[in-house]
Image (cartoon, rainbow, N blue to C red; front, side, top):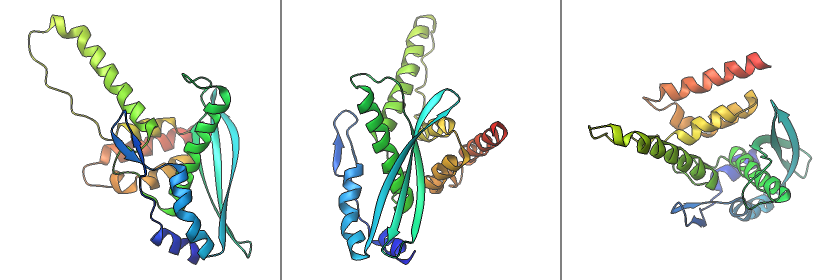
Length: 210
């Protein structure tokens, strides 16, 4: 535990990747691993991943367990999940599963080593979610533009759209709690009661389903 605390305090994993489509910087799993290896060596510790496939309500998810261990055999674990969709444009089955594994492993690393990704949309998946939501809104406006004589005010962008989408995709309370802890500062900020209530509602739904 002392080693984990020290690594959390001293880990610096800059966002070394750039998304040309969304024009934002983000950190990859490889960026985190490169930054953490010297700290693991300093404390004579290591990490390992194990993946498993789970089915929930007809949807398939890849669950990653990250184990942090020292030379005495002490361990601390955390888990993260990502949906393993059956089809994705331009990717075969192995590539889809590999992408889901990398995504889940990155967020398991975030949870274990207190890496904060809440200040901007630093993943392609998040960007795709918000882009798709924007396209749907634009299409609906185009369909009704001809029948309206009053100019419409632009709809404010929902900065928490990605979090809300993630809440609804959670299939167990443990994953929901991990998501809550990851975005805790934003969720518990003043004025974000509706976002917090969304987590509570989803928790009750999952508990009832279980």
